[in-house]
Image 1 (cartoon, rainbow, N blue to C red):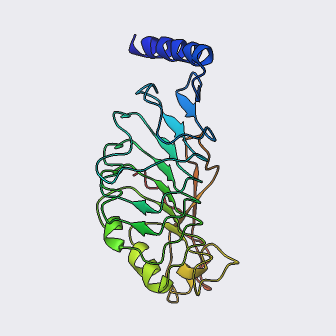
Image 2 (image 1 turned 90 degrees about the vertical axis):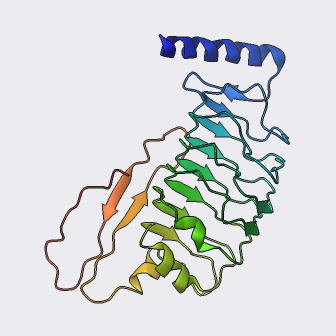
Length: 239
């Protein structure tokens, strides 16, 4: 009954959007496309139970205090890429506990407060590619969570070896290409350089990262030692 009501509400909202000229397009699965609409803020009239929100290529203004979005308890995917967001302030996303994917690529980010991602306990994928980060407080990744994929490519982060050593125990796949001292031909080069003979490294390859498929297919891959013939196959951690 509740699902039927939600489907009806989405259908009514979609019809109203066409009539009123609402800037976003919303499908029956609750995915809202608001990309490239010259928005400064998310539309107040968005349904609270949407599952995916694309706000890329806008002119969004981030609050210095309090959350960016309110009352979106079912949101799984949030795309904020290609907005100008120089700084991420504390508790910006703290009420988005169901979020799985956060895209902050191409946002000119130069500073991230250690508590910016506080509350994202179900976040699997964090995309921070093509920004202006010169430092990163690693304490933001030490809180309990389920992050498995962190993309930091094409920033200005120094001391990348130390960064990898600190993040590998908790985050299975970290991409650092395009930062000082990182080779560009392999996504796992920074990890393999630190492996001792006989050691194995568990990484996740996340494929099909887009906002219409939240299944987040993963494939486990294990680098082999030279004398290894039958690598052990493990089940993917469901966290």
